[in-house]
Each structure stands twice: as structure tokens, then as C-alpha cells.
Length: 234
Image 1 (spheres, rainbow, N blue to C red):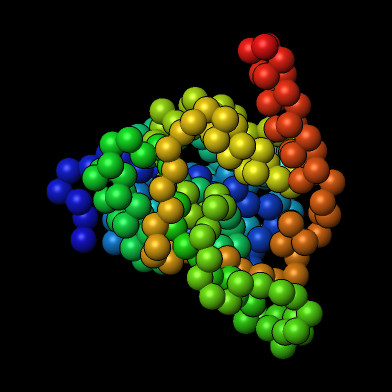
Image 2: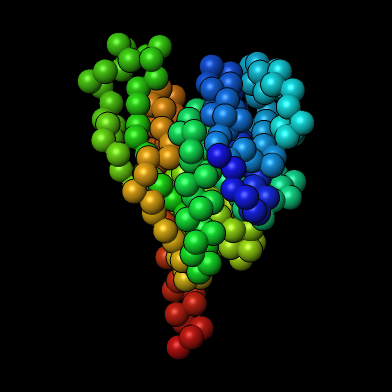
């Protein structure tokens, strides 16, 4: 059920070598009860069939952009630069949206003009083809938890522009650092109780394979920025 009158919605989907999953991610966007006005898939130098799978959908609202491998922050920035919507959403290429994700968040945002960023809850699941292999070896949130991740976010364009681009030097933790800037700016965040996304656990998730060094860099960047601001204010 579409809203009678609404802002344009752009969805940015970065992908790097996720041919096994990106089709399901795209399908979950295109099947929304509130269809987005555009879905921008940014291929970050994939060497598998990710691009072919995305282009096979052949929808007027779907665009595929290509770039040399530069990391997820650069891919998100490329998608943001191309986006024309008043509201911006992200989905990672191995995640899946619930069908009413955009509708729930857009309604919440429409009802509360002071809100800049809307999130929902998420559930994590073991990818079916690896469930037997990984069961018991990885911990994940089977029950719904507040989903303060990119795949659950809907943001006003003005808020995104105030926060600025993602840090392209961070291969992991770019969203953590970006959200830290949002908090520093005092942007208003709302977390809905509804489950809006499912995060796939498949053993090759970037957060599992890239280690914690970039997360530490993201935290250090945030602390350095806050110290500099405090020193300037003093």
C-alpha cells in the first residue's frame, strides 16, 4: 500500500563479489509495499557474476554503476552522489528487507518532522547453504534486536548531507564512524520496534573476515574529532 503523498526514496546497494546473495537483496527492495523511486546498485569491482545478476532485473527504477574496487565507503558515496531522492536508504548485498520496511519507516518519518534518521529492529540468520557447516560455530542474534546498521536505516537527504560522505579509508566500520558524526551533530534518531531487515550470516561477512583494526580506527577518528572540538570550544 503506497502513501497517498510522499517524498522520493532512493536506495543504495553496494556490492562486491556477492553473486550468491545480491539477487535476493535486490528482490527484497523491489518487492516493497512502498516501492522506492530508484535502486542504485554500485558494483565495487566484483570479479564474479554480481553485475550480471543485478542487470538481469532490467527495471526502469534500477541502475547499476561500476567502479574499481575501492571499498564499501567509496561505493556508498558513489551511490549517494547519484541518488535523487528526498529520503535515502541503504541495503547491504547479503541482507534482506522485510516487505514493509520502507513503508513503516517512511510513515514514521512523515509523522515526526523532527526525526532525521529512522531505524528498525533486525534478526540475524545463518545462510541456508552454510547452516549445517556454521551452526554452533558463530554467535548471532536469533531474536529481534535494535538494528543500528546501514540496512535498517531510512534518512532524510538533508541529514545525510550534514553528516557528509563515508570515510573511504575504512574498509570496515565506515558506518560506525558515520553514525558517530550524526550523533555529534545532534541529529534525531528513532528506532522502530518492528523488524525491518534480516542480516545474513554466512561466514564471509566483512565484519568477520576483515578483523577489528578498522573498527579501532573508526573509534579513534571519532575520539580525535571530539577532543579537537572540545579544545576549540575551550
